[in-house]
Amino acid sequence: MIHEQKKEYRKLVKMMKDKHSLESYFKESEEICQTIEQLPAFINASTVMAYWSIKGEVFTHNFINKWSCQKRIVLPSVDGDKMKLKLFEGDGNLIPGDLYAIPEPDGPEFDNYDSIDIILVPGIAFDGNNNRMGRGKAYYDRFLLDLSAVKIGICFRFQLFDDIPVDENDMRMDMIVTNNFRKL
Image (cartoon, rainbow, N blue to C red; front, side, top):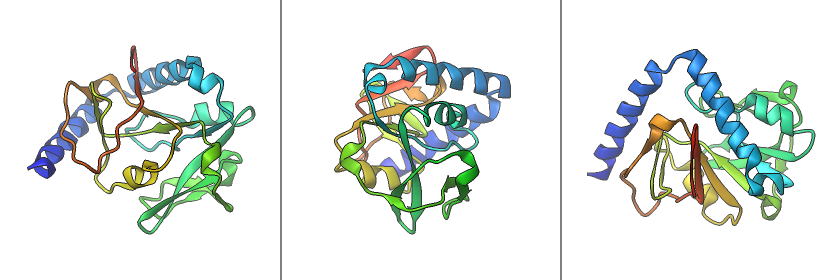
């Protein structure tokens, strides 16, 4: 039942993403990143786990490049069914990853998870209870399970619903940031 409900939400969000103009995509992504930059958790963070965005996700490339000179930025790297982290050392050091060829840093694994202050988490949909629904592979859910860092779900406003279907494996965020809205 929940699996089918999630499938419907993924289909709905895909339709909305397809209608999202390129101009709005970049403008709203910039608004979201500016909101993150003003959060005390981000201001005080030394190490930030982010993600190198792909089509349809909040655009993070400029944000990562901007802050990588002042903060340690780590990005996901997928190895089989496990997510690992690698230190971001410039976009010239990115290689196609195993999963959907999403760019990821080339280099050794970053394993000092306790030093991560905040984690920026993409998703397909979020809700008013800080629940997150991903793409269905549970990479983030499994990875975030034992991390104590502040988990910030980031999405466009149309990806935020009153309530989404979740199960016991779905990780709840500490905060959701979207354009013109922040849910604590």
